[in-house]
Image (cartoon, rainbow, N blue to C red; front, side, top):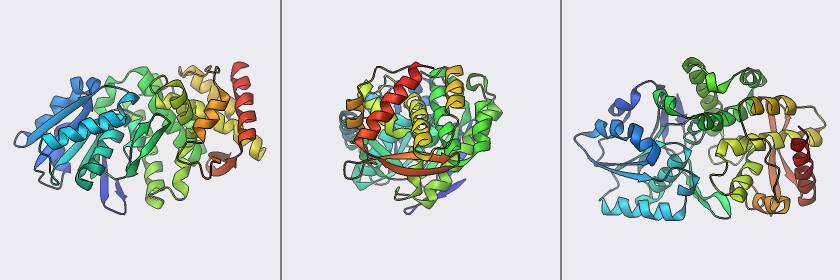
Length: 354
């Protein structure tokens, strides 16, 4: 699959054992390579990646696992390492890991010497979403992904074998984004996912679901690279999700767990706004059956609204939500503070009464 962006076109390659053949997918002879990964992934796959570059200067940096690493401190530390290691404009950065590593390493690449090449090597299901489309960022304590850029990689190399090491929580986190993509694009796939036990999914099913999710995102990103139109629809569920992540502390929920709750909230609001029934109960049941946390109701509503208003999608301090007229028909809607408070209160009550 090839994605065309304004600055370059890049391939997304899915396969097994392809982490051992990176040279097959790189079109340049780089002066040096800087691999950025986290402590969990490093123990499993860092040596495999470094083994591709026996004749090159290769540097590595291992960051702590988790959302807390998407910080200005980590950003500055990695920039310092890039400089002291002697990276130049013909160097390559490799983001080896999940969405946190991809976002952070991509932002390093976007800003080091005003931009150098990088490739994404995702090792989580969740990263099928974040590794495609060129969004790179770090968090601010006042909001998620508020400091960043649009900067596409030169390739996304997705070795399915690396997903075998994922725990159940990481599997759940990734599948929330696949469910999101189905909700905005395809009722048939959404219904297929509702019949899937994600903790016993086969390799064949997983590849099919990943390819589906990537294809949905690729089509939208190509049509709207810088999120001026339909790319906003990929934020379904994220208005509340980002607020929850910030409010509860980054890492208390995985990104996908927060998105799952956000998807339920989007269906809750959509049903009221458009007076059209949506599969809230079906999604809630599937999330519960697959172990997602759905009873987190001790929230500070006013604080959540404040966090939502710090979101990138907010315009003139008005909260913009992605809603569904029906499955496959997303739209955006401005929600005033009073209505948002009423929706949050009724949503919490709805979760409590499940």
